[in-house]
Length: 397
Image (tube, rainbow, N blue to C red; front, side, top):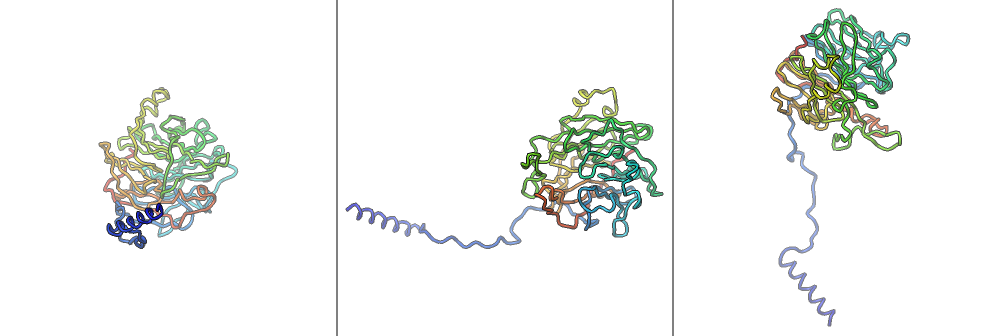
């Protein structure tokens, strides 16, 4: 009797499902997503200036006459020369092949591993030598700045960083010049250490004297809670000393000088915040570190950057490597995205040219073998790109 009741109930259920159209059926077959399905929109009209099929570049600068220089640090690629000029459709050693080789007898003479090149707007291009291949401790007396005269293509000045500003963990990264301050001008350099304190190094060009400012400060340090995501995956992941994965923490990296020279903008690579500090206080030895720290302004989030730049109109540009883009901070403090494109794989080093374009390197830094258990995921070529901004470079004098 009980069994008959159960069978009747089951039959009634099947009947109701059939009548309501909820009968169990096979799923509707799926098809591949059409290529023309709605997708995120790109921003900015990109132009490729040069394609690199060999070593990975990190830096670019465009001079006031339109000459383009790039650099290749010794990070594991075959680097025949660490500084080059793009000329006649190829990259040639600059200022020559001989100086692009380390001098074992005198670390101050030959170029060891250049991380940044910057045209100063005064007829010279400056080469920033870390003397620290593969982020090793800098070779004593090797971390330096070289100025090359663009008319003669000769080195006209070499400034070796004094020992008081170069720690065993120091990795000098980027620089900006101001010839309105000091007899021959002042240069500001970021220390983007991956194992020690970050800092802003302030050097007087005439004397070569330098000081470390904001060393180990929150503003120049990697954000301990920063976990970057690029291409949908955790990025900058390396192996710690215990063999467990960890995110590489990179200190103060990008740097930009306001058009009037009164404000220095900077940010750690392992952070999304932009900071600003008065340059007059940076240069003043009587200003204590406590006073300087109190004067630093946190301008909020801008995205994660591996490069900053400024223009003559008071705007600041920042790479946004998590979102394949470039962002622009207007003089009123508001932000806008000027580039967003999946081909902008790790925007590195920005430079405003005299032609109203913003030039930048896209080098796939996050795909390096060190972040993927020894497997190099980079796809050549790397690119030098540009986007029209209709602005002039920030003046240095």
